[in-house]
Amino acid sequence: MALMTWNSKYSVGVEALDNQHKALMNALNELHAASIRGKAQEIAGPLICQLVSLAREHFSAEERLMESIRFSGLAAHRAKHQELTGKLAEFVARHEKRDTTVYTQLLYFIRDWLTKHMQTEDQEYANRLSAHGVH
Ligand SMILES: [Fe+2]
Ligand SMILES: [Fe+2]
Image: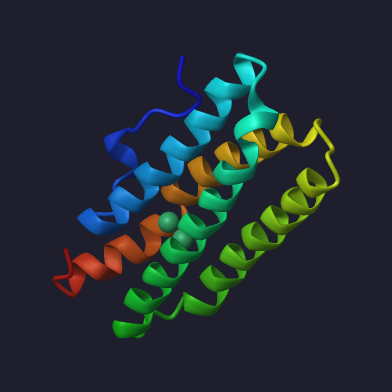
């Protein structure tokens, strides 16, 4: 069973951003599937790199769109993104020190963060974007 499954309640009404959320979920699912098979360590390197770059791309895409509509919640939203980026950097450092307990913690932390973020903070800009006709 996949760690995360797409649900329409996660949609922010912008296809490109929904696709980025789906790509993040897929990367987490891949790492999760590998960890069930006891193979997390073997594929974690490239997958964690992929997660970091997907998150970076996604956060800057969202922040650019929020900037374009002068969204008043941008600073607070950016701080949330920085919180996850900082946490990811901690996980990367632990992975590099060959701490094998990191994978499960990373998976559940990011799953919970992303699930909540897509349904709360991301929905706040989604409403503003749709009011500005951005899809
Ligand atoms: Fe997002
Ligand atoms: Fe966001």
